[in-house]
Amino acid sequence: MDILRIVLTIIFVIDCIALSAIILLQEGKSAGLGTISGAADTYWGQNKGRSMEGALVKATRVIAILFMVLAVVLNLSVFK
Image 1 (cartoon, one colour):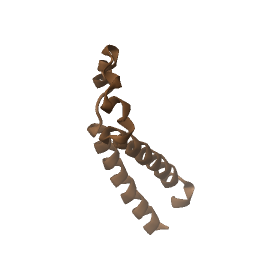
Image 2 (cartoon, rainbow, N blue to C red):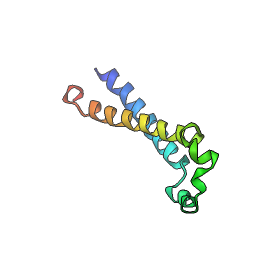
Image 3 (spheres, rainbow, N blue to C red):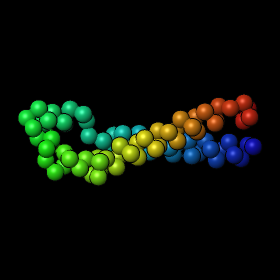
Image 4 (cartoon, rainbow, N blue to C red):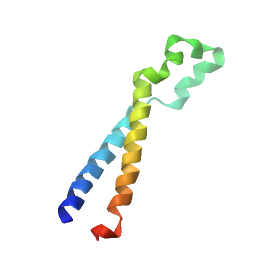
């Protein structure tokens, strides 16, 4: 069980670093202020889910879920 804990801890640390990097790569919500003037109807506004921005949002969700699952698993009494 000790080896499993070490492997999960290493994965957890890598996940933490990846989550921090992906969050920092994302654009701020204040960049969407062009929607007031109708700029959201552009090609990029309509296809946001298929762009790099959409991919970063999806990756953030997956990595955040992995972060939470690993945090719970590592705190189980099985590893103590």
